[in-house]
Image (cartoon, rainbow, N blue to C red; front, top):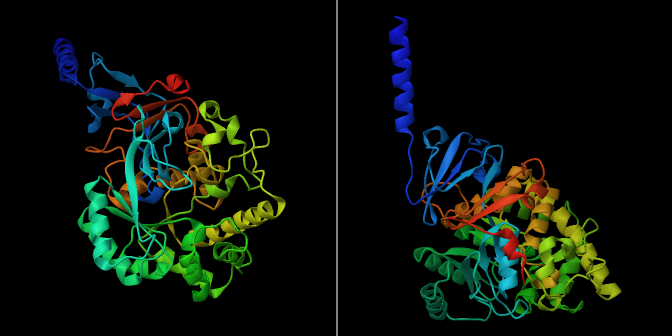
Length: 440
């Protein structure tokens, strides 16, 4: 009897050995804890004992780690480590190779790319580079309906994946633009003026950008119209700044704010505060120039940069005080939106007002935590929420998604600072040399 038991044991052992699989032409990440960032960070079904199979630039499968042969050639053993999708900066620019390096070094593998007068021309020649999902706008000037449709189709044909709908669009035109963009498979963002955000939520617009902009519904209609007519100015007497001062003095219990917060919470639209624009003027801010990757960035490339010694703006006293008060109130307003159930996307708005590539996304995550999101929810704002908002195939560790992955030594659920340190970055299925990114 004992002989047969031993024979059965060896047969089982032999079969288990022969059943272990080698994946040819694949990178395999074995073991580790795959952090669940689904459902806006509300789900907590972390995975252990799994192996991620990557072929070319795509996740081909997720299987039990026990089925992987020890002879697998391209293998990363992530035992004891934490696995997360690569981060996304949802509103930013790349001006040069150093910017691209900075994003990647800080774990940002995808960006929603913007360019503007203040941000400068977008640089498409970087290598290596985060994946670029370009945003293009419509409605920065008044257009006819046909011009709007022609503009959107042109953007789509030129590779744009996201449509930014801007101040000059009427409600009917926002609806027209959103519907056309969705027919073409594009995501939509509103930065509106002549159209109320409440209306855009009903149209199904995917997201809104900038706290100070999507809070315009709380202002009197006459003020909102003036902002829409002249939305950009650093002059403290401009319509924009008169509105900002209105926000700064807003009663948090006002009916207008509470109603707007309720509307945001009930809608399917995401909001993107871009706190990083005011981060340097907040009392808890850290000096961005002390980040290791900042050594390759040229201060002259950055719009209104922080002082390298203080980490603060050298604004004139009156302007600095205005920004500080606005930033303080912005935090309180966003806490109100959060309390009512608003869903968030992360975006740094680099490089306006001293925001910096890669570095400022982490500033954004820090402030999202300060308004009340737990760490898992914060991680979702920079990963899976982009798929949920726009339908783009990244931000999740899932079959068929782009293989953009962070492997972290320490758990970011314990401390968001762990996103920065001791990590492996997988970009489109290939491990990056992080030290090489530090070279100018």
